[in-house]
Amino acid sequence: MKILIINGPNLNLLGKREPGIYGSSTFEDYLEKLREAYPDVVINYFQSNLEGGIVDTLHEAGYPGTIQPEREGEERPDGIILNAGAYTHTSVAIHDAIKAIPVPVIEVHISNVHQREDFRHHSFISPAAAGIIIGFGLESYRLAIDSFINRLK
Ligand code: DQA
Image (tube, rainbow, N blue to C red; front, side, top):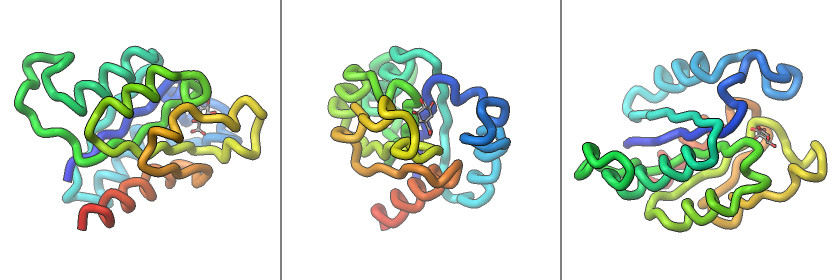
């Protein structure tokens, strides 16, 4: 099984950024643990602070070769785990990109956005997502992997 994790803006600063909310582990350290825990799953990772970078990556995952012609003919991932960061609350373009591709996308959040500011309570991603996992810290990503594994059994 092949899974693609996409992290949006400011998530490159995990470990340094507001550790009281997001924890003190870097995403790279957590990713290493995830890969060890799921040796049979290919876990690819992409992070961008740019909305267009996330849209391009969703297109490429859904239709390999669309953005990077040299990837034409590659297999699609079986699932995408997306933490769109702040774009969750603003991005119609990411919503549309999820709807445009034939790969299920699970929306994840590290923090429980519903316990936080009102502007974090609305998600443009949720209506397009196959499922939503919120508030389990970095374990939100593992729960999403488990969900794809169980779905594909
Ligand atoms: C976040 C929650 C968002 O509101 C915030 O903008 C982030 C991270 C989370 O994982 O808890 O950057 O998506």
